[in-house]
Image (cartoon, rainbow, N blue to C red):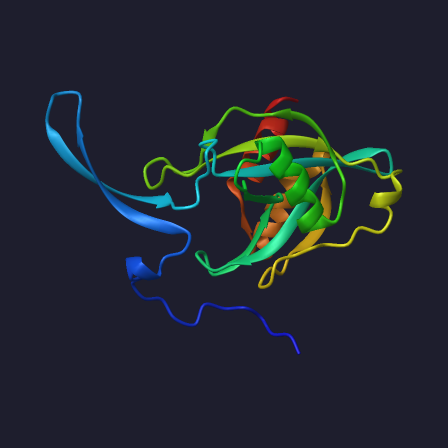
Length: 198
């Protein structure tokens, strides 16, 4: 039996219970020499490479048209389903590209080839030092491994994969927002960039 996910309680987190993040107080000096204090959140899982995560911009051909591989999943911090691209934390000594290949396979079942990687990006620098690289990948639908993809999700992950045409991505995201979905910034910025390039 399945049910709609929902946040049932919101309360302060004891730092001793935190597995993935920590709150820090940063003492810093501004341009005038004045001492200041800043509150921030940090990932506690950052590996040796200094990069927390990857997001995968997977391009999939559908009827001879380029589509982007998207996901829907419930995100407790916003209390809603989010439309986003595949992503995940970098494990141990993995390169961002190795993590992207692994995460694409685990979350979607697809095998992809890396085309290029972005610069290191920050998501919300006023709140956190969390960072990531976006890795662009192509998914060859003629490969036998991509004929019947099977997700390899971790316990507690519930991800639905689908594609959207790059040509009409902005309009599709607007439609999904009207339907009540929250749109991830990486996907929204891609759509805006595509709109501006025409």
